[in-house]
Every structure is written in structure tokens, then in C-alpha cells.
Amino acid sequence: MRADRARLGLALLMLPTLVVAMDMTALLLALPRLSADLGASAVEQLWISDGYGLMVAGLVITMGTLGDRIGRRRLLLIGAAAFAVLSVVAALAVDPLMLIVVRALLGVAGATLAPSTLALITNMFRDDRERGRAVAVWATCQFAGGALGPVLAGLLLRSFWWGSVFLAAVPAMALLLAAGPFLLPEFRGGAAGRPDPAGVGLSLAAVLLVLYGVKQLPVGGATGVPVAALLLGAGVGYLFVRRQRGLEQPLLDLGLLRNRPFAAVLVSLVLAGTAMAGTGLLVTQYLQSVLGRSPFASAVLFAPMGLAVAAGTLAAPRLVGRVRPTTAIAGGLALSALGALLLVAVDGNAGSLPLVMTGIAVLALGTGPLFALGTGLVLDSVPPERAGSAAAMSETGNYFGGSLGFAVLGTVAAAVYRDRTGGGPDSPAAAVEAARHLPAEQGAALLRGARSAFTAGLHVNGLIAAALFAGLALLALAVRPTVRPAGGVAGEKVGEGAGEKVGEGAGEKVGEGAGETASTRPG
Image (tube, rainbow, N blue to C red; front, side, top):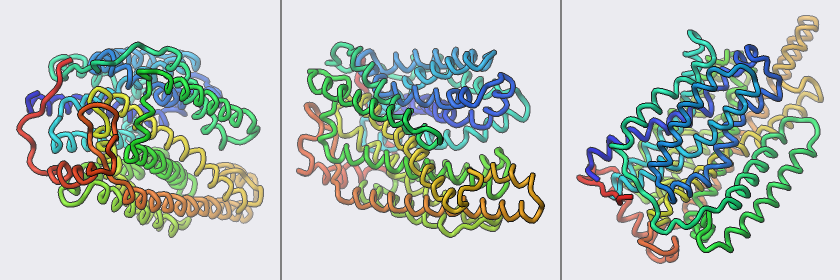
């Protein structure tokens, strides 16, 4: 594939990458207004906000493998067409149930886009330097989109109704559909095998049950339902694993996990996502509940976290021109640990705002090499015909990490808050409401205690995140990277020179001048 056409194709692939990421977060600001207009209850609001992400996470593995079988460009364009149509329907929803159903279907369409874009990059850029840059650009768009989603929603909601948040995706998908057949290559695995409907059902059920349980644990009230969901999800997951091991051509190649670098990167993506999501959750609440910023102002103040990830991913290929990929990843994660520790020094005063913004920016900047180079190492660990499956596993790791961060670190912070307040109002927002019914002096004391307790939870989150990042930095140094095999089972020779080849061969080339050509395999 000619280099200029490949670069135009890469620019086109960034559209669905941005849209899927922005759709994950843009609804946060629109939710109060659409809920009021549609009369959505608290439970319905939860499903409106979570249904999309749950379906993306639950189906991304299936869609990654499906793209390997029927063609990655074909699946991408089918998903883009569905996404555009469903976005219009969502914008015109007349009741909560309609919007919940459409959001779930949007998640199905979104699941086709994420692994297809990343897998196509491996076909369009066979040169190590070009592919490294392309993956970095992809990761940049993914995380910048998540940060800019609420900002874009806030701007739209100032002038338009809540449906405009959904319609923003339509022009991007229309352009992808128009230019995709001309700029993107088709690729499908030569030995893709037959579909596995039972495997699809088991994988979807396992992921949805586990994510539902994780999301519901910190909500409060009875814990029986989320615990039962977790146990049932684990049982279904076990059945899925047994089935995949018995198939000659499985839906998910679990043999990839025997590749230690591949497994280490997946673990790192999950735990780094956990630390980032938990930090993001508490910082956005801190900005609103402790410092008193509006939702839109908080979204703007929080944007540097996503933009710093974008900067880190773009800088990663140039770092690898000087050091090994694992060294760059470890150094970045050590920087993230430092950023997390800065959050331990904040207090409940407005003067802490610069420290908070610096902390989240440094934390996010350090994760850039992991998300850019780690994703590249995942793709390099498999032959081209399995790139869709590998990309799907990487994406699933990100979604699991985010859900774990919201659940686990959110629960820890809530426990710290309850301990510090001694059973008082269960959140700073509840404290504000309670203070309105108290004498001025008592109300002020209640608010000071609530804000101090929430800030203490943020401190604990910072310590946990710093420990996670430091541990992952050590893990990165302990594992040697591998390279993409020409065929056969990925990772057969891990530790026997593969790491040296990536670190001293492909790695040194990243960041130099762009390659003249990039080849692609016809579909």
C-alpha cells in the first residue's frame, strides 16, 4: 500500500476512534437534561449511561475475531453505517426505554469499530517505524476523545437540545462510509474458521455479568445481586475458556496468554486503567463537591488528563528511538506514580487546584508509552491474521480496567469518607443538602467535615494508584518484549532473542523519518 494512501487511511480511521471514545463520556453532561425531558428514573439513568459501555466491552472480543473472518474493512463500514443511523434514532428518542435500547445497539455498533481500526493499522503499516507512529496516533485519539467528550457535550448543550450530543457522530461516520472503500484495504484471515455462536454467547454473558457486578458493588444497598453476578460471570467465563481450549480454531486464542510479554501488557493495561479511572472519578467529584466547580467547568479542568495521555502516546515512538520499549514504558509508569503522589498533598482549598491539575497531567503523561508501545507489543506478538483478536483483547483489558477503577477505588474512597464522617451524610452533595436545614455555624462545620473526608479518600486513592504504577514499572522491566511471528503460535520463542530484536531493531527505528512505503495484504 502506498505511503500517502496509508496516511490518508490512518486519518480516516481516527474518526471512528474518536467517536467511540467520545460517546463513552459525552453523555455525562447531557444526562441530567435528557433525564428531565424523558422523565427517566434513577435506574433508567444508570442503564442509559452504562448500557453503551457494557455492550462495547461485552462484544469487542467477538467483533475482533469476526473482523478477522469476514473482513476488517467490511465490518468497520457495517458498524459505521449502523452507528450513524442509531445516533439519529437516539437523538429522537421519546422515552427512556427507547433510549436504553438504542444505546445498547449503539454499543454493538461501537464494538465493531474499536478492534477493526487497530487491526487495519497492522495491515496498512508493515514498516516498524510507520506502524509505531500509527499506533501512537490511534492511542492519542482514543484517550483525547474520552477527555474531550464532556467538553464537546457542554459546548453543544449551551446552544442545542440534548440530542445534539448523539448527532455529532453522524458526519464522521458519513465521511468514513464515503472514503473508506477507496482508502482502506480489505483483510481477512486465510484460516478464519467457522463462526462459534455458543462461544459468542458465553463470552458476552461472562463479560456483561462480571462488569455489571463490578459496577453495582459500590452503589450501596444489598450486595447479594452484584456478588451473584460476579460468581455467575466467573462460572460462565470458565465454561467459555473450556470451550475455547477444545476448539481447533477458537473464537479467542487463549494460547496468546502463554506469551509472557503479551500477558504482561494486558495486565498492565487493566491495572493502569484501574488507577486512571479511579483517579478520574474522584478528581471530577473533588472539583465539583469540594471546590464547587460546575459540571462544565470541571470537564474543562479535567481535560488535561486526557490531553496529557495523548501527548505521552505521541512522544512514545521518539523515546523508543533512544531506549528499549520496556524501558520507556517503565519510565513512564514511574512518572505516573509521581503524579499520583502529588494528589496526596492536596487539601480542600481552592489553592490546591494547580496541584490537582499538575498531578493528573503528570500521571496521565506517564501512561502514554504503555498505551502506545504496549499496544504495539500486543499486535507484534501475533501473526497479521490474528491482529483483530489481539486488538480485541487489548480493548477488553482497557474496559475491565476502567470498570474496576470505578468500582474498587470508588468503594475504597467511599469507605474512607464514611469512616471520617462517622456515619453522617453519605456524600458531599448530601452534606450540602443537609447543611441547608441546619443553623449557619453547624452547617458550615458539616460541610468542612464532609469536604475534608472526601479529600482524605482522594489521598488514599493517590497512594493506591502510585503503588499500582510503581509495581507495573517493575513488571515492565522484568519482561522482555517479543516480535510478531511470521506464522505459527505467537510467542514460541519468548526470551530467546526476541526482546533484543525489538529493543535494538524495530525500537531504534521508531521516531526516525517516515518510511517510503507500507505494504498491505489484499483481502
